Amino acid sequence: MKIDLTILMYWVVPAFIGFLFGAISSLLAYRYQRKRDDITWKREKEKMQNEFSIDLTRLREEIKQDLYKQREISVRTEILPTIWNNLLNAQGKIGIITAVFRQFPDLNHWPDEQIEEFLKKSVLNDFHKQQLRHESDKITYYQKIIFWYELNDAQQAFHQFHNHVLHNKIFVDGDLYAKLAEIDKCFSEMLIALEVHHEGPLDSRQDRQELYKAIRDHNMQVDTLRTRIEQLI
Image (cartoon, rainbow, N blue to C red):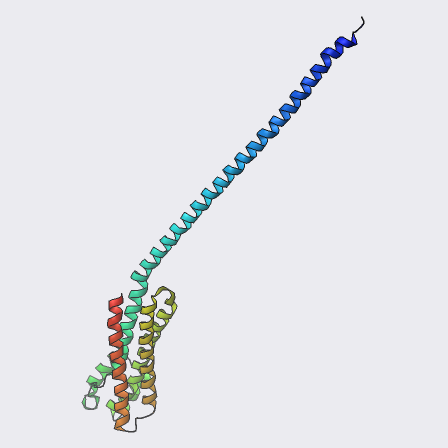
């Protein structure tokens, strides 16, 4: 059977051209759709990133606010009450040894039984108790030795106040911290003055008057600062 090439070309060539055109059209359509999908995905991705960034910023702000509230609660319920109690304790301990007029037990005229009862309740260690028993002037000895016990108590109370304020400085308002620092300075200067003057005897009445005046001025300053702190907190 002879195949007519003319007829064959008539059918095959158009069919091939149609197939080729269809394939190219499909390829172009696929690439176009792929590009649209890429653009859509890119937009969705940017949208998701923006939403995530907004949510992350909001979450950070919420965490920041929660931490700030917790810090404020901690400052109000723990830090400030402890500082205040330490301040009052230190002022009370320092007030004992800075008192101008003090009364001491009349140990020189007490019977031995009464002295022993007193020593049982005393903070003196066993060595100092024994020393006092053998002293002829028991009052003078007691006044000298009890000073160092009371000074040690006052210094410990002061250091507790000082350290707590220093360690919590970042949590305390600037104005409040400034006043606490002034009180800290007053306490320190009073303790140093007392220790120095006790180790070296005051040579004159004027020396004693100057010491008492300095202590009185410091105490008045502490009272004034304490009142201002009460208004702040």
